[in-house]
Length: 84
Image (cartoon, rainbow, N blue to C red; front, side, top):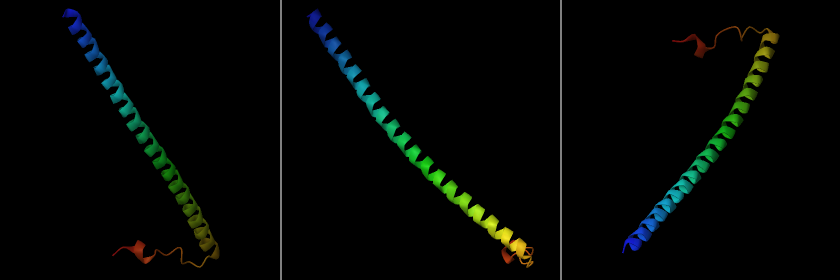
């Protein structure tokens, strides 16, 4: 009966190892999903950054044109800048 309990112990150890492997595989998949989500978020942020840079350039060009015109309107604060 001693060999029977030894083989049962071996089976239990094997089952525990299999469960640990399954757990590691699950965690690996979760980490891959998280990595993919972070990669997508990074791409979206990079695109948003490019859009903001283009908008900034456009506004700088518009401001330069207004300053070249010298119409004085760009030197006065707008109503939203004056405050209450």
